[in-house]
Image: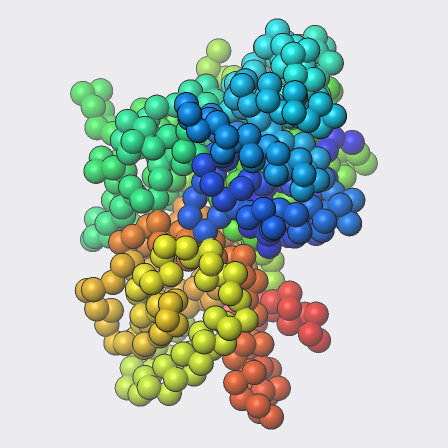
Length: 326
Length: 181
């Protein structure tokens, strides 16, 4: 059966994920070394050690996302994160930067390494490089591939593949976005914050809710209109061609209906996005996919409607898995 | 309506307008005293929650249940809470939602982002402070029934039952209360 890899932004969410049926939980340190560096979120070193003990006691694994790109002259922060994750007993760090991958492989040659989605390894040659050069055992595939393309990759590489099945989507090639940097000076890839909340403002008025990022008005939602995250890529803009979502609609990925195809494509693990979300999200989404995987094994029908309340914009998509625009 | 016992952000009931109207003349001080004691108890028993607030521990949050005729001003450090008819201007952030959704958020029964997506939660002011507060509360796994009932000594058990009955009608039983039974 494919593994279920679940998010946790706090120790309580980690516990919820395990109780709901996660095979592995991924989390990050409370600093810029991970791509969900939001206030009140993430793990201290001590919390990680306790989380690993809890997970291992229940037969689950812990993966530590160290998936931002080290700043010049500050690589020691990221290297220390790798060292601390390994010494805490993490089952694998999830790394994006090629230099950090090299450091981890040299310093901890027996440690299992995963390639982050932020590395944007989207073809067999790139994946083979990570596997051969650093001994990477698994790659998290970017959300730009169709299911047949994933099948092609798994046929051509010995590296395990992990794919997203639920949660937020990113319109850019993973790890290559400058929209947040342009508007706020802070980057998801360097500081770990896409659209940092310090630069987000909401204004409530009779017309609805206006969201701004770094002074840019990016959307206005009517009173009962479903909303999305305050990111530039999901902004609704007026142009000479009309008003609308120019880059991407505010929707969430939901690949519940594609699990059979992903299994046949040779995927090893299914990943749920959302370390920034609450325990209620983690518990419900993990349980949903645990049931869907059980249904897949037994050949019965899975519930495909239960997750709508958790989706951005109250809508879901199959994203690039089914490229209807081609 | 969704099953209220499920950990999903389905629509939760609101206080009927007539009941809210009947509450309007009630004095606020007794409620303020009880809620202040609950806040101080939470502070004593959940130090990690206040660490998660980080630089925002001294922020002043205005919390408005949209279906009640009063609101709350809450500070974490030092722990202070006041019940007011109208929120003052001098706040770092304002959070508004129905009472049921606010209670469910406090107990981690709903996801804050999902409430934002469905427009059941509105935020103004310092969004970073609000996010820190949301994440700190979500990690704390608060059991409001236990916190409240502990204030009432020998009357704690009936107070707990009364609170749980009211909460059950609004957001369903908590995991803690199910285990307690």
